[in-house]
Length: 240
Image (cartoon, rainbow, N blue to C red; front, top):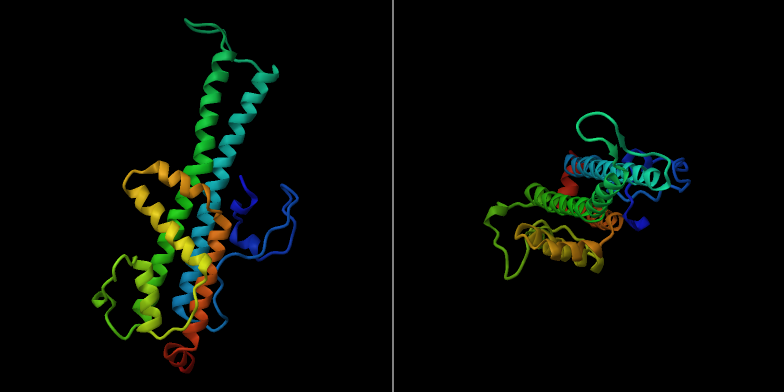
């Protein structure tokens, strides 16, 4: 898997050390970290992104471990280091070849699980997290009831929330082209997944890097937070 797909435990991202397992330096922190000025909204979002990241790390690592165990067993059987001999019961004999065939199929499935299903799950969760975070901010900042807002033609919910933040909440920020492109990919993946078009999901997921996606989402949230502190909400929050 591409190195840009590797995710790290949130605690490790804030530590300065060398990963003992592979000798590689932990990358720069790619998670959203809120401003030192406290706000319940942004600190909650930061906590939830950390929680999501660590869950995705667990998914990736445990799937990888399962694949390594299967590959190790196959390698031992292939090299002759171990054999599958059954000498008790009605069926006896050397079943090494049969076990290797079963392992080969399992390895193929778990490779696909690791490269496709696990990565797709992480991206879908990240997409849902971003949408939920934007909705939460709109609820907190908007002087209007956001349920009264309607989506414009072909506008996604995240698009609508970003528009509300800028026009109704008067939070000034500039979304990067990279993030716009990522959100569009999120939309395609979620729709294809929901409608059973998994081959479309497979194609789209294959062109997206997990860590870059987390970085992009974190950067957008940082831009919004910076604009929020300069808005009327920020002025009221600092006074209180």
